[in-house]
Length: 167
Length: 430
Image (tube, rainbow over the protein chains, first blue to last red):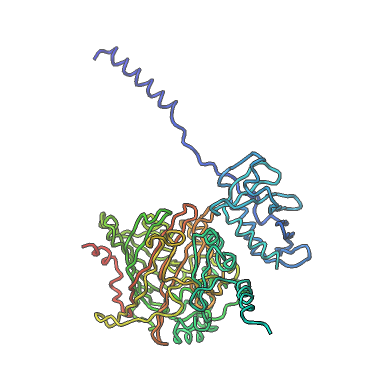
């Protein structure tokens, strides 16, 4: 092979190397969405939950949760609920179209959650229906347009909280 | 005077209106199905109720005398339980059992360690779990050959035949075994027999009688001819690619100390049992320490053409007994364990777990295990509780797996401990 031929092959090799470098497929990075409650659960000092038929207004003072009448509430139930909000992350983004929200259970009275710290709301959430397989539950930030799916552990914890509120 | 012939239709109408349930032919039995699903509202976990409402599940409900039901365990068990009152507590770190008199783990005990359950006790969930464990251990050991059936909406898609043999050191009604050099609570061997591609795949488990040690598990794969140590968290992996898990045995198969337990409620559920009262055991003519129990086959929908409900739902030889339960949450402390929060329904008297709802680590509910039992008792000196079957249903994939449903099982009252060894695993396919 001539020197010219070798140089031509080297040039082709260099071009191919460049193409490989430039056209390197990007490795998809998993997008980790933030949890529903973005502040530590221990910082929440007030929790308001309104079900269609029952409501709960709870405040924490010196580690004890009390309702509006001063009744002591089961702290472990409230802590578990807030802990769940701080752990659950959206599993799926579903709809930005307000017209579709009724299909996710937002067309009827919903359960609403407001968590506050130092008088400032840090979470405002509406809870819609469970998905068809009941593995998850639809939620949306109050007055927001996006419906997301989160694990149905939220439904379980809400039921426990509702039971505590009704006692 | 009112003529009887005119009153009769009125009486019938009143009876129909007042009857809360559809009564079957047998007295004390009734059928719960889609027609009267509301009657199951407070008796079944939500995902199960949904399938009842859809007509996929139905239940033959049998009312039992609560006092008689507790007698499924022998008097010897209840006497031991009574004698345990006030003797035991749990340590704060892992909720391990403590003998109050020594501050250490008890040398040996049988019966429930906690005869009285105080709902206000911060460790109550863990104490319920310890009671559950000692109900399992009372028989001392035994085994069965059983099938695992993967079932979807179109029928069975995979079948595995396997066996489990187990030996207990703690909780035995037959008393303490002095020869326990490994300080074990229990040990067991499980192996697949069919089909050919999994034949000889086997595991050996040793559970130590201490608070800290996680279970030691070895898995043997014939093609590599090697037994390798595996993490105990693999009990939360699907068995043979089916929708069933090793931790479904008795609805919880792990070590009590490796879950965090929390009592969250109480209620009443329908408890699946082959029959409400005990089966008897008969001596095995070939071994004086072995006793055989014959149980009826629980036929599933896919095995019975024209049956009612989901293909995996049991059609025959399973009844449901209304039972008071503790509702307890459990969560593994092992970061490699696949399950997140697990909700379990424990019998308040016999501490059997009848239902378990499983969430994954992302908080999605995905799986329900229905855990059926049968009880064995010949006299008041000995009794045993057997896990008859598990109906594992993955609600995310709408598939199920059935485990158990064996017709013969045995109680072995004097195992050779050497049998539970890696040598047994490696020689099984020779």
